[in-house]
Length: 345
Image (tube, rainbow, N blue to C red):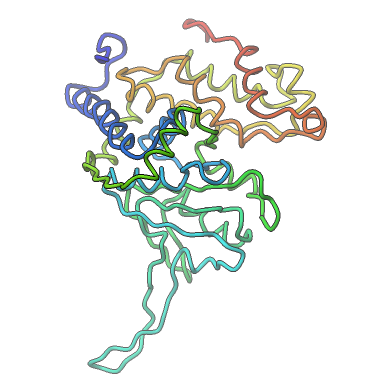
């Protein structure tokens, strides 16, 4: 689809050319992923939005739905450094961040402390089953996810851009797990829910995976390209009315807000923070560019409401008793919160 250059333009021809490259790059990435990944359009879309927006993703789904395969394949297509850590109860923070060790100089015989980087020093870190490790180890990711750096023994080491954390969780096997604290959940831009495939898609998967597989991927993007795209995304303009709509949606999740519908007051203990509105707008900018537009629309915000809000809204016992989900609550919010007019002040 050709990009609409007549709405709200970017800063110049260089930005417009870069935006076109991003749109074409998204199409090329999808073509490469489709060599191995079947279905899951919404999951792939949200993962790519997080990629271009510079956010982290929490991917939730039962085993066998290609969560790990998707992240690994994406790293291959993008030619990024990839590291996978299987989170277990005995995993220590230093197993992720790295540690100082004593090294002896072969010539002088002197010993000194040297830092050995852990798997965190990569471009894409796959934190597999992140809720299977204790909070102390989970917390080792916090600084990296937010500040893009690691502090060990009082020394700070920057992480090379781009850097992403893709964490996976199994929603049905909770024995021996450690739920992520709200502060860490809030560091994830999206919580992406991976569902079952359709019957035809499952048939395709069975046929492909039981035959001889020889997949070769064309590298369609480099690390420097992704960094440039992330900077471009932040330069995309957003109308005041659209940004206000994102803020209204987030404020409506808080029971004490006048914008909150009755269901929120009945079902919600704590609503989302301002970070949710930031990610709605930032994700909307990336989604607009991916679809060949140079401005953010109300539809971009609405499309990302569920992955942005579903892990930031804390439901109460009343909601749990009625088997209400955060996705259901988001549907109610989208129907209840009006879209501001362009002239609203």
